[in-house]
Length: 296
Image (cartoon, rainbow, N blue to C red; front, side):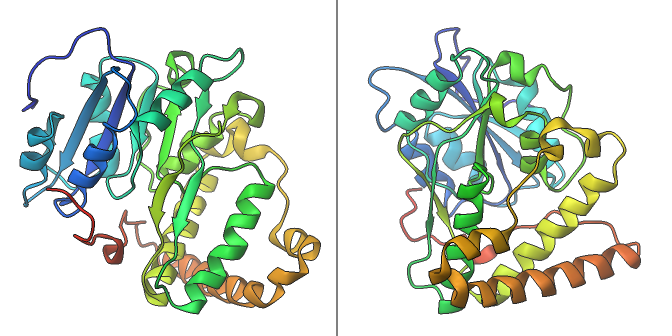
């Protein structure tokens, strides 16, 4: 069901799909940032409210976004429902709790016009301000590993042009939608242009970080266990392991102890979930859903 603020037109610079489950504290902040730096361009913004019981849909409509209502709280259902009504390309898939400027959208859209480009993402800035030293240490190593592997994953934003989106039909029912989307493409088909960084909130507690990593490993295992998804080209590319990254940057050794401990415990707990036959549940970090800086 579309409760949008009116029909769009064919002159939009890009379509932006935002799955949102009870995001009233942060959705306004994102929608406001998407208007920055557009220089007269317009975006087709679709907010897919899935299982919402708060003011997410109302706030999205107030900001001029079109709203699609999905009864169940499911990110994948939201992505697919919004895809059905999104009007153009390139198409961006954006988590509701990040901050992404319209300028970055336009720059990424231009990168997707390059020959051979099928998918792209802006750079990410991970905000660890005020977090415990353990969380800050973990992400020092995490960011170094991501950079070494040219992987803008984890930013909460990825985009595809029409040819890239034609690589698959609907989003599969997996927790790690960003991993799936990245693995659809080879490194040569992905772009990461220099532009405004998307602001990503790091977990505010060590417990929240651990819970996030458990979901990551459980989601990765879900993709790896699928006969079709495990054969996607991007997932078969060689990657630089964390220990090689740290060996090249000895200053990271103290932080690496936290990185190893958190990931080791997260892997163990994710494997236990798998052995017990428990379904992988999509979840989110509630510590990043803060009204601070939000504009309802």
